[in-house]
Figure 1 (cartoon, rainbow, N blue to C red):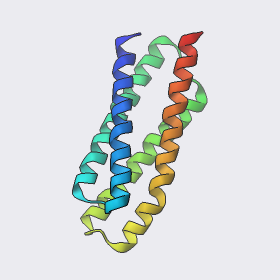
Figure 2: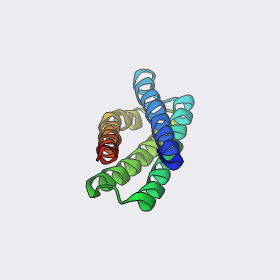
Figure 3: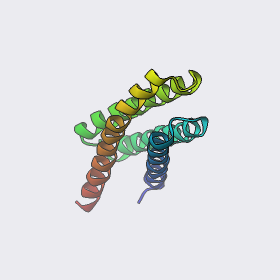
Figure 4: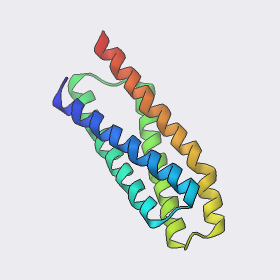
Length: 129
């Protein structure tokens, strides 16, 4: 396996860990500064993993189009999600912001998981052939 792919897989798995931690602990406790920091780390890991995957795809063959679309949309969704968490934190966890944050939290996270697992499955299938 190429070193660039190994780095990408590590970054994406770190993103999965930090996103999951931030989303579910934030839902349980309400978004606090620590959740924002954990979420930001997840977003950074996602960006780095996506960048590495893009470099890998350009070097070794293009990823399936459907995964490109879901991957970019999910990264954008998580960035939007992070902004909602930031707003909730800055506004002192305003009740209206918290309701919106929790309403979209699982939806965006689920979309991100679909992109995460579709990429993993796609990559494994391509390596198998």
